[in-house]
Image (cartoon, rainbow, N blue to C red; front, side, top):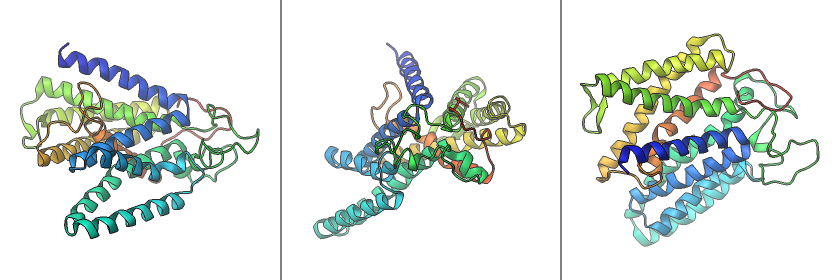
Length: 316
């Protein structure tokens, strides 16, 4: 089996898994994000010369920052536990390694900002209609951090709370849109680059990317964003969707280049072996990580969702 066929098959099942987890329930979306966070953090630590047990520990450590979504911990409590663990680790390293501990602490701290924070913000998009529009939370409004009592692993306080698979106002649309726009950008940039590409975008970081592919991916993803807003979100200001699509393509490409720069610095081809034919988790989700921050930030400026409903949620 050649590499292209392997990439196509694994990419197909990867897309099915992502779409299925998003559409099924907030629980499956959270589980998917925990898996992504673990493998991205593991690879980040390995790239920065951590051994496998330490890298696994760092992967689990990132879960502390996401734990409010699935436990009764509040964000501040989770951050407090993470801070105590970090202080203990840094103190031990300073006593045992001296100056060398400084670079390791900086690298792992940057890893938390690079991986855990964007995924945290991404999960908040499931309730972004309330964050963006300023509407107060109601008993019918979906809120990850109180669903149903501090995450889906918490005790169910009564029959009035939604079932785990049927959370009212769980917004599948915004979270699915992030992946659709990223996939659109990658696909259109590849196709237009293959057809018209002549001028390298950045020969040092990514020799195969071209300016023609970059502009083609950006313009066509802008069109996809406008179509999503008009057809699925019923937002008639299609320029809003076009701007979002274009920015997702630009910052998604920046995410690709950031991870490429990291690999060039370390002299490696792939960050790991997360997906056959696609490399590691960081290779697969580099654009997604930048896109999470962008969409969450824009959602605070102008609403990107349909009006709130009190019945069962619909896909968009």
